[in-house]
Length: 266
Image (cartoon, rainbow, N blue to C red; front, side, top):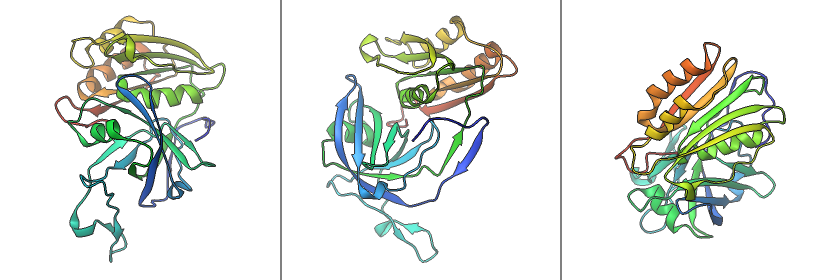
């Protein structure tokens, strides 16, 4: 997926190719709740993801283990067989290897209350998965004074990818909320990174993250401030980052999931 080399924000649209049929090639448990799953297949030829916070739509097999794929429709689009659509969720493409045609994903496993978590918990080499997108990428450059990256476990794929793509000399302040210390992972980067882990414990989602964003040192100026997590984070984090990073900052905050809604998270 390559390093970030652009010097300003660019929106790049990708060719729509339908749903790619893939199979799991490797499974690695990064923590008790975060599982790295690599899928592969010839359908991944030409897969393109240019931005750290891109998203693909994952299409999960049905209860019978079979994967439904759309068919061309008379109107030129696609249609699902018998009008039946599979369970689908948005996730961040963590890494892509064009030579091996392998796509790496990181999914939070939290029981079987939703199709994504249930599939991830049961995934083994050979398990089927459909992958659609990304439809486009919002590519940002590296000509910022600094980067501020914040989020919970669901944001770790985007945060980890952004940090890997930053060049030497770049600066980043990173704040990540996880349930406890056992859920912390390595986040390698060539950049100068100030990383703060906060442990949620029994607090409401986003509460510890917001408290940390209000307390830690954050850079100001021409800063790219990005955050993602539970939907209650969006408004207060946007206000807080704008205040703390200054009027020249570019602030983007995304709700990746909603408390009480199963598997509503990239």
